Image 1 (tube, rainbow, N blue to C red):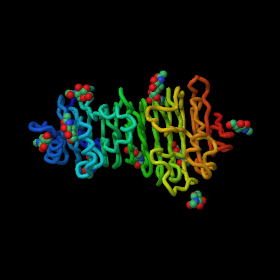
Image 2 (cartoon, rainbow, N blue to C red):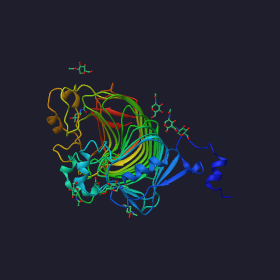
Image 3 (spheres, rainbow, N blue to C red):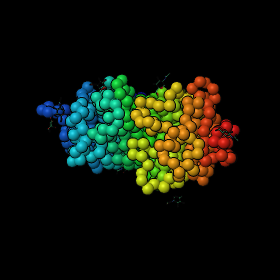
Image 4 (cartoon, rainbow, N blue to C red):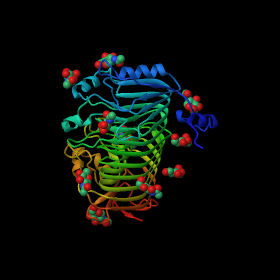
Length: 443
Ligand SMILES: *[C@@H]1O[C@H](CO)[C@@H](O)[C@H](O)[C@H]1NC(C)=O
Ligand SMILES: *[C@@H]1O[C@H](CO)[C@@H](O)[C@H](O)[C@H]1NC(C)=O
Ligand SMILES: *[C@@H]1O[C@H](CO)[C@@H](O)[C@H](O)[C@H]1NC(C)=O
Ligand SMILES: *[C@@H]1O[C@H](CO)[C@@H](O)[C@H](O)[C@H]1NC(C)=O
Ligand SMILES: *[C@@H]1O[C@H](CO)[C@@H](O)[C@H](O)[C@H]1NC(C)=O
Ligand SMILES: *[C@@H]1O[C@H](CO)[C@@H](O)[C@H](O)[C@H]1NC(C)=O
Ligand SMILES: *[C@@H]1O[C@H](CO)[C@@H](O)[C@H](O)[C@H]1NC(C)=O
Ligand SMILES: *[C@@H]1O[C@H](CO)[C@@H](O)[C@H](O)[C@H]1NC(C)=O
Ligand SMILES: *[C@@H]1O[C@H](CO)[C@@H](O)[C@H](O)[C@H]1NC(C)=O
Ligand SMILES: *[C@@H]1O[C@H](CO)[C@@H](O)[C@H](O)[C@H]1NC(C)=O
C-alpha cells in the first residue's frame, strides 16, 4: 500500500526532527512566487509572497522560469518556511550595475541573498536543468588580477538560520564567495557548486564560510578556486563528509582568535587543486582549536596534500603592524588518518598573482628567524617543493599537542614517496610520525 503524504502525516505526526520538513506534515499552505509582468526585478515579488504566505508554509519558485533578483533579497524573521527552487534564480548579468549596488550600503546588506530566521528549509531541484542559482561569474573572471581586487564583487548567500535544512542546492558560476553560514544546526546535503572558468581565474569562489555550530554537511561537490569550506572559532561541532573538490584551496580550518573545535572532515576526493587538508593559523595572533580530524582523503594532482601552518599571512594585507610574531595558534588533538595522495607538477595555481606567491610555504627556521628579518626575506628561504606531500609548520610542541597521524601514503609528483617537512616538533614522540631534523619519517 502506498500512503499519500497527508495520510503519512496523520500516522507519523511526530517522526519529524527539529527541522521544517513539510513533506512529513501533510498539507501545508503553499504559495507560488509570480514573475514580474511589468518589469525586470523579481525580488519584490519574492519578498511580498513570503510575507503574505506567513509561517508554517512552503514558498515555490516555479519550474521553467528564471527569477531575476535585480536587487538584493533580504528575508528576515522567517519561521517554519520551506522555499522550493523548482525554477532558476539569477543575479543580474550587468557587472557595472552589480558593482554599483554592492557599493550602496542602503541596498546591499553584505550578501545578495539573505535568509534569516528559525526552521528554514531550502530545497533545490533534482532536475539538472532546473533550480540553479546563477551568478554570472564568467562575466567577471576574465578581469584577472584586477578582478581579485574588485571590491564590487557580490557575496552570494548569507544563511543565518537556526535549524537550516538545505538540500540539493546548485550554484552556477558564482562571482565569488558562495555560502556564508551563520546560525546553528545546519543540515545541508547534496550541494553542487560549479565555478569552472574558461577565461580567467575564479578568485575567492569559496564554497562555505562556516560559523554555524552543531552542523552536518553531507555530499558537497565543488569546482572552484578557493576553499571548499573554512571553519574557525568560535564554531564547534561541525561534520563535513562525502566531498569532491576540484581546483580548490582546501578543506580548511583556520584561526586567528577565540576557541573552537570538534570538527570532522571525512571521505573526500580532492584533485587538480592547490591544497587538500588544510590548517592556517594566522601569524602574530593566538587562538585555541581542539579535536579536529581529517579522515579518508584521496588526493590527486594537488600541490599541498596536507598543509598545516601556524604562520599564515594574508599577502594582500601583510602582517598587521604591532602584531607580536611570537604568538601562534594552540592546536590540540588533531588527527590525520587514511590519506592517499600525490602532489602535482606545480606549486601554484591561477590565484598566484604576487611574487612570492601568497601560497609560498615557509621553510625551516621560521619562528626564531622571524624576530630578526623581514617577511619578504623569509619567504625567499621557502622550503616548498613538489617533492613534499606534507608540511607541518608548528611554532613548537606547546602549540601543537596531541597530534595523531595514521595510514598516510603520500607520493611526490614523480611517483616516489613524498618528502615531508616539519618545524617545531623535532623529537616529539607519540604522533605516529617522527619529526627529526625538520623532516618527517612515517613511524
Ligand atoms: C522548529 O521546529 C521544531 C520541530 O518542528 C519545533 O519543535 C520548534 O518549536 C520550531 N521552532 C520554532 C521557533 O518555530
Ligand atoms: C518589477 O520590476 C521593476 C523593475 O524593473 C520594479 O520596479 C517593480 O517593483 C517590479 N514589480 C513588481 C510587481 O515586483
Ligand atoms: C537554468 O540554469 C541552468 C544553468 O545555467 C541552465 O542550464 C538551464 O537551461 C536553466 N533553465 C531554464 C529553465 O532556464
Ligand atoms: C548596466 O548598468 C549600468 C549601471 O547601472 C547602466 O548604465 C547600463 O545601461 C547597464 N547596461 C545594460 C546593457 O543594461
Ligand atoms: C553536533 O551536531 C550534530 C549535527 O547537527 C547534532 O546532531 C549533535 O547533536 C551535535 N552534538 C552536540 C553535542 O550538540
Ligand atoms: C572513503 O572516501 C571515499 C570518497 O568519498 C568513499 O567512496 C569511501 O566509501 C570512503 N571509505 C570509507 C571506509 O568510508
Ligand atoms: C593538475 O591540476 C592543475 C590545476 O591545479 C591543472 O591545470 C592540470 O591540468 C592538472 N594536471 C593533470 C595532469 O591533470
Ligand atoms: C580527540 O579528538 C577525537 C575526535 O577527532 C575525539 O574522539 C577524542 O575524544 C579527542 N580526545 C580527547 C582527549 O579529547
Ligand atoms: C610577545 O608574546 C610573547 C609570548 O606570549 C610574550 O612573552 C612577549 O612578552 C610578547 N612581546 C611583546 C612585545 O608583547
Ligand atoms: C639536517 O638537515 C640538513 C639539510 O636540511 C643537513 O644538512 C644536515 O646534515 C642534517 N643534520 C642531521 C643531523 O641529519
